[in-house]
Image 1: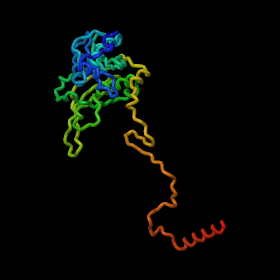
Image 2: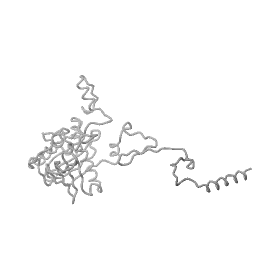
Image 3: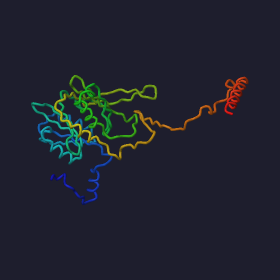
Image 4: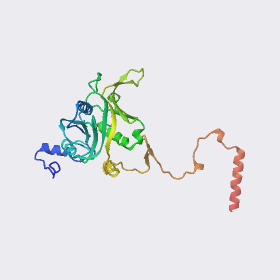
Length: 306
């Protein structure tokens, strides 16, 4: 049995709190990412990992030592690091003659590799090379995906889901305008993925809504899709399963549309519209001749009944 798989009984209160944090919850903790260097990572790959770590702070762990492993051949070391650092996302960087400037992005389910995608770096501009102001640590980004491939091809669709998981940050209930500070833009075009990051500048517009300008902040990456290791449909559905306690209970006669508007259905008894009290107007009053004819019709009906 692996040392991390065995049942551990806490001996101190601090250890008990630590184990309680790692227990399964209805609302899981924020997904942390680990950034790992391969045994032959060059300066470009190392700088890419540092820049991504700067965007992920404080929800990331950067391993500075080199780790000789190949994720597509043996995943045990990645699963070990995942349990050790409590990370469900990972980015692995390596470099060799066959696959130069290589990045592997993936995610875990129950500390086992769910899916991972290999990307090749063709062009890279670092955070340090772009001399502009940066965003503070822990800022939640806005994510934009452009290109039909993200909605058509299965590999790109899964890559989009993986990138959203990797960069989304904590879940928030309310957003203020000043908190929208930077954008991560992903474009799929001609078999390449262009990754750009921009800082939002709120300018005066003469009205309540400010004018927005984008200023490139870095890093900037041109990526190529290489190998993929995708989870089966059954395992992918299992990983997306929601606990019963979090599912909203259905209420009778209440429905919601796509925008979150609530609609209610009211059940009423059948109404006799002839007895409905309407507004009295002179134009709607019956004339004396009409009244006489109505009285005569009622009398004739009574005679027939008798």
